[in-house]
Amino acid sequence: MKLQNILSLAAISLAVPAFAAVTAEEAKQLGTTLTEFGAIKAGNADGSIPAYAGGLTKAPAGFKADSGFWVDPFKDEKPVLRIDSKNMAQHAALLSEGQKQLLSKNPSYYLNVYPTHRTAAYPKKILDATVRNATTCKTTKEGLAIDRSCRGGMPFPIPKTGYEVMWNQILRYQGEAMTNTTASRSWVVDSSGKAVMTAEQATVQDFVYYQTNQADRDPDMVWRTYSISKSPARRAGEMTGLADYLDPVARPRRAWSYTPGLRRVKLSPEFSYDTPVASMGGVTLLTNCSCSPGPWIASISSWSARKRCTSSTTATRTSMTARRLKRPCCRHTSIRSASVGKSTASGWLKPLSNLVSVTRTPSAPITSMKT
Image 1 (cartoon, rainbow, N blue to C red):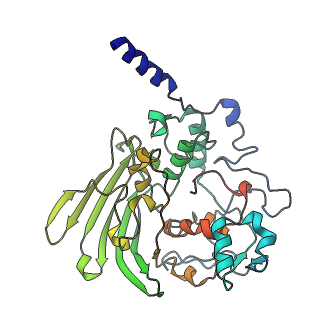
Image 2 (cartoon, helix red, strand yellow; image 1 turned 90 degrees about the vertical axis):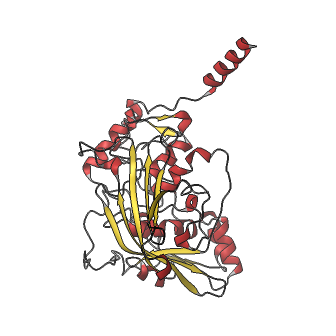
Image 3 (cartoon, one colour; image 1 turned 90 degrees about the horizontal axis):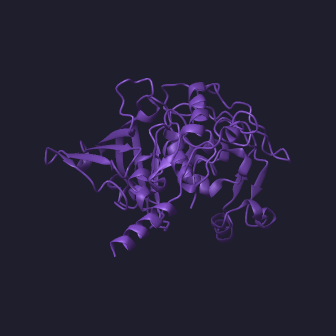
């Protein structure tokens, strides 16, 4: 019986796939046929997607750093196409099933399609680290963790597995140093269209994974963050803090909370998985929040067992993105290219990409998965 158990364990261990880095030959594509971060460098055949030429590296004209608002670099452009219920059949190949449902059930709903611009840009040292990671970075523990050799750049510019794609999303570049948002607001919109603000928070994020010049950084940490609630009055003064790691199996998320009424700081292991986010009215779960890497790491070990998709009516926005709400349809390039300046806008806009994106594969690297 003992021998049988040993053989069974050996068979299981042999069945575990090895997730290794790409070969040096494959990595030669980076910077040639592929961008350094893994996108197809050339444009597409019909010219609707241009070749990548380095992206947008300077702030658009009229941008004021302290204004709290983005400036649209393409504000004068006109749509090249409008898709509605009348012509959706002609463009069915570019539409998701959800978009088709929205168009067919709402005659007044439409999608404005704008020219494609490939504006994503990264600092040189991030690109250099990404190229290095391609041949040195690898996942461990069946894809649920990654090795310390991954640092300072996108871990898998040429991903081979779904886990590597997921780690690209978790470790996407959002800056190196501490970033903060002074007034992040969350709203719940009921069926009558009434918007109720559920929270206003100040948040601070620290992306330790990219702080390779810090001698005392924790090489196993991905990020750390904390938030302070400002309103409504009943939540004012509440604080939460989180830290996530490259190996969430060995070092699970550490989370703390402070409640003014109790005047205590307590560990909060429930800040993960399917826990409702109180600051978002309880209609969004921590695993659904794609605006930060934390919830992805907190639930990464349960992905193989949980294959469900949830949705909510929560709309989280900041003062910097409030003006975009007035647009009938955000263009795909605005969603794709929000890396210029502060990172808050890309966090709020990303969930909209499932609704309004009609761009095709060559336009961007594989950095996230859509359910």
